[in-house]
Length: 118
View 1 (spheres, rainbow, N blue to C red):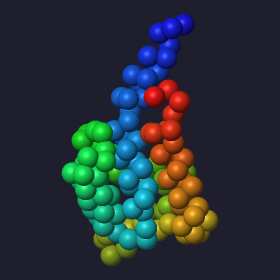
View 2: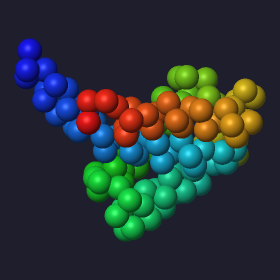
View 3: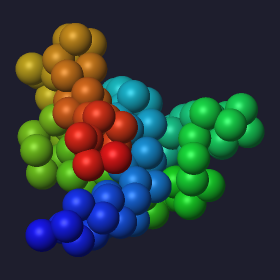
């Protein structure tokens, strides 16, 4: 029983870079091209890392950013479509309100920082 908590901590720390990438991506989502959103999220992650606001450099990853966008699409937060051979992102109606989008970001962030396991 005493090994459960250390094992949970280890698992959370393993996925923490991914969660940091997801949290940054969530804050950068807007109606724009996918390239613009990925670039903004990458810039945000790089800035956080350069300012030592982020524990794991592994979070600076375009793969994590794109995976987060797929997750947000599955959750119905964004729509992805092609226009003039360019991949675009549209924030869905309930999430156009920034407060609702912040709630989605907070749900991702709580698993990163506010978990009682750490």
